[in-house]
Image (cartoon, rainbow, N blue to C red; front, side, top):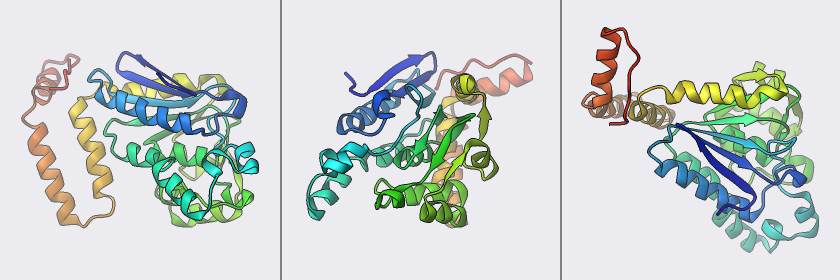
Length: 265
């Protein structure tokens, strides 16, 4: 069903693995299609409460395929008008789809996250990086711009000034510098990155599903709106969740000193 990508579920978690290890998990047109389809599947599955995104092999995601760049093939083929259309109808479907996903996404950065690979990690809500991982917005190094929305997501992850410095220099940083500037949330030993991602995603999945999804939605939609709009949004969402069975279950569980059993209702 999926090409250049693996999709599986583990209880309340969906795990999406970019699977072109020989190309360091660089994008292919098929991978873009599969990634959008996998996110659709995770969104539809009521049992899934959080998503982990990672890469097969030694890299998380190397961004664009350098051989296709050299040969002007695939997503790098065409005149300016054709290329603009290809970006809009191709790789830009990924940030659009992720922006509509209410289920939290954790990036398990198992290795290099370069160019569009770093951008994809920044599109996720939380990021765990392995020791030795390298991260960089390196588009200028290959004479390109962040055509997948990287200028938008990187600045929102670490702030405009830091993002601009990384984008204009194309400098590659290690996992510990990424942690220091807030680009990743945790750094763990190389072999432990998936365990750390599962732990983080599991802590999210343990909570009331609708409350989690609406909290994520409120956070993103409140980011660049005025206070009154944010308060109106919060009041509407609160009115919804306060009338759910999961809210009542949470209160009863706390009062009864027991673990809650959430159903998503």
